[in-house]
Image 1 (cartoon, one colour):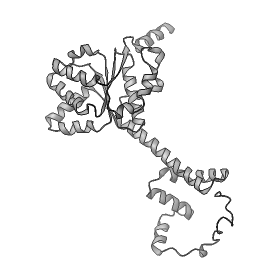
Image 2 (cartoon, rainbow, N blue to C red):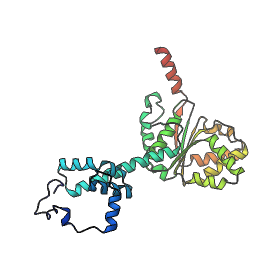
Image 3 (spheres, one colour):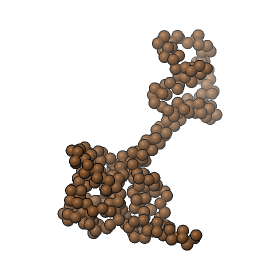
Image 4 (cartoon, rainbow, N blue to C red):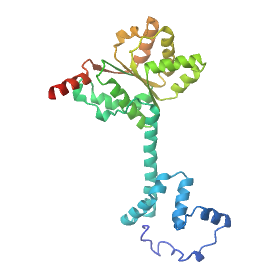
Amino acid sequence: MSPATGTAAARPPAPSTDAARPPAPAQTRAVRERFIAPGMDPVDAAIEQAARTLHLPTIRDGYDEAVEHALRERSTYKQFLADLLGGEVAHRDERRKLRLVREANFSRPKRIEDFDYQANPNISAEQVNTLCHPAWVVAGQPLCLIGDSGTGKSHLLIGIGTAIAEAGMKVRYTTAANLVNELAEAADDRQLTKVIARYGRCDLLCLDEFGYLDLDKAGAKLLFQIFTDREERRAIAVASNAPFSEWRKTFTDPRLCTAIVDRLTYNAHIIETGSDSYRLLTAKKNRRSS
């Protein structure tokens, strides 16, 4: 049966006048009348108010179009309801994806779909696409992107992080320098435990520009606390311009450096992006073509 073509055999005929309906309680009538704008259909007003009360903005804004579509398609009542609710769920999922990506605080928008694998044959599209699914994040595994500047590390880091956020997981992006500064300020304010706990609640921590700064022993210890708190429990992804053998320049304490490398490489996914700068190659091509 469709909303447009109900039959008397399938259901009782609808009352033809309001007089045939039992009178609504005075309180219900007062509430209904309060939300009816002048000249507005009472049924439309009731639907809109119910959608607002139940926090269903997609149904509130699109039920007229949904009704017209159901009438054209001669949908059953059950199918009409399923379509209406399905649209609300889909839009709610989309809003949640946008919120999770926004809360990740990426420095700039980057998507894996826009990555140019032909410009860097060192990178396996199959491996990257696998990392866009959250299984490794759920398992608490690390990801290390190692390569020179301009080889696509940050694009991959942000693109993979965006895909994980859109899969419904909590992601946080920051640079190593910003994170160390935040931890140092929190330690001075006696808020270090609180800040570490906040970072511990995100499913994936994306740490960019790892290895671009020389950390003193105090800064290295603060960063080490983050790694220790997340070890085999929450995933972490780092992008570094230095190979593991040169990380002692960042972490001047050899023992601390070894401990950090161990935590970031155990059960890790490692992508080496090489040394040929994509930005430099693009600039040379542009100069030759101009």
